Image 1 (cartoon, one colour):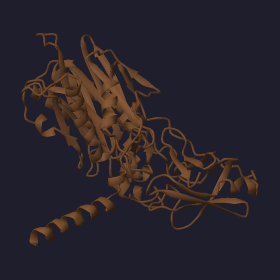
Image 2: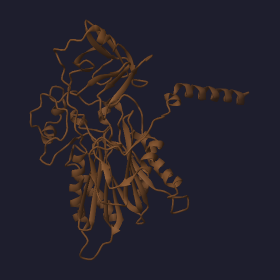
Image 3: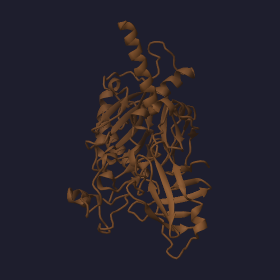
Image 4: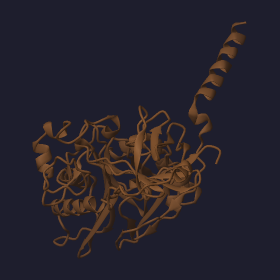
Length: 459
């Protein structure tokens, strides 16, 4: 009797868990986009292959670095909230090169699936097997790209990571909002909320090669070498030529309402910069570990503030070992650290994509009721994000109808949309918002690299 009761209870529990869990019926079935690129870094290093994969529906993505020759790697974690795979192994100090791949991913901890997926791809493709000493080693880290920056919870999964791995090629690295940096942002500490992405830089001195790659999703602002801010949706009350130093010097007042805008919310406290430094000169584990620390420390110049409690900053330092040390000709590890720190700053700056400009409403444009009525209805962006469009007095209004606000369109009241043209509307705000109706029953928020698409019920 007790056994039957237990079985019944377990059955009830299992059924309840299945029915009550959104994940039980929200499996991803999306098409990977591989190696999309606009501006790119091109570099001469055949043993490093790079592949990117993205889900436009997120948008979110993954970046895979595949080393054709097993390499030595060290790790330095600085942020207060890192998310990594196999990081403990990297701290053991073994001098034997074991690294096959490094995977950088969006999707927060769900995106860590990308790293293990690359390991199994190495095995499935016959590049590694299960023999002792030949097991694939992929390591990786993630950024948080959910929250109020997008209206869904799509994440980089096994299919996307393996597609990126298999599409990897040498010498090309997409810059900006691509791969793992597809939905990155920076400057949330000062409410800048600028779009960010992935950056890279390469330098060769004689036979010495140094490459730096980074995905900047930082709480701090990206800072130019002259101290100016590289990207920020600025508060209109700020002085025209305000610098990163000015913001830091004004803390905490520079973050208060009336000085910089709204205080931080939870989404703006989920930030990370994940980075990779590669040198071809052969180095010991101790030298490589110190190089990781030196370069990671230097990144505080290009991102201010850096490595806060709410950042998950991690840097991997890799030696491919192709360039043997020769007495009297090798560059010293300290010199490499100085050079690499400057290369990494270049990589940080190259991560900044072109920022969208605020759309300008046309106050002279008067739309007919029949034109506006074609937009009326409730549009779904995800299971928790919806917008209801209504009309009144020949004006179009929007109100969030799901479980969450949708950017400047809130749940508590309808807001009037200002017409830009017949099918585009805006909400005046510090942060640009464009509402574009592209087809009957279909609307896009912020068309372009960061767009969110909604569809009307019954269309």
